[in-house]
Image 1: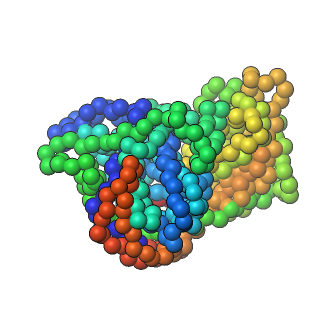
Image 2: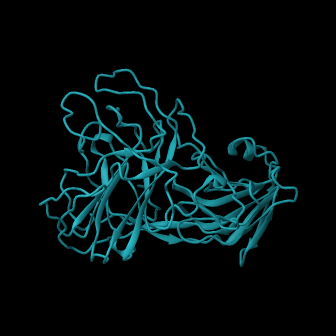
Length: 429
């Protein structure tokens, strides 16, 4: 696929976040927003599924792109904000005749991390945002005021003073809109997105590119394929700290002394509240943890990981210090996939008692799948492997309607990503 540098889409973001006005003349650092994870969605109709539906997308932070509930890709790759990269995807394989929905989970870290550098803001731009356009039949679907959005049910961490790993993801499934990625979901309670506008000298248009993302360009590498990787053995067991009101890191520091074990995993596992186990994937993978939970509402499940083991069977979390907290909705269908990839071999899962129930909650876990993902219910770790991808080619134009760009004469041509090195890594985009 080949797109030119001009965009018909607009930068959009959740309206709940209203950053301080910023101009090109701000020399002092502005107050950064809290770490923010958002859901954005747009439904649309097609009579027939096109042979191809080329799409490009980027974000001021990180994104996951879905069509009708199927993940299409993640990104963008790391780089200088002024040369922010877009990714190209084909939406057609995931579309159906009738109503379709494009969904995006996007994260703006608020402060610099070890793999992300914040932009110097201009107007509304530089405090989080998403930019997408897709050629669907004779129309171009774009991010604009026709999209809806809400804050995702993650705890919002305030920006820190030091550059380090992203804030720990803490997800409360009790406040989640479970079916928001389906076409049948009613988003009337969601808010209209806020269209972001720049401010400053030479800022004459709301159409990208403009500062601080003035040289948007196609990513030089393609998406990475995903594989589901299952844990092979339980190699550690111990007692979990019983007060989940503390942050995950403090809870893991307070966990009781464990012991090393060697137990093959050949079916579902049951873990009582107040216990932890360490799972061995038998190889280091750069992965996104996935967890599926069958537990009472309010059950707290903490994850930590590392490449080595302590003598008590718990993983060595330094230097990455990756942790994740999941609070169950209790409907038997809880599932979450961590946004951030991390390199690990050992995954610790701790189930912490909750005052919401009088009996000890349990989490049924089965070995993980590909993209490293554990399930406390089913552990399904996966990993991403790089593969070349070439979309089919067809000329596209556009219609005029809310969320659709005006016609363009710009053709696009078949494009294949630059070959990627043969690493075994999960989307480090």
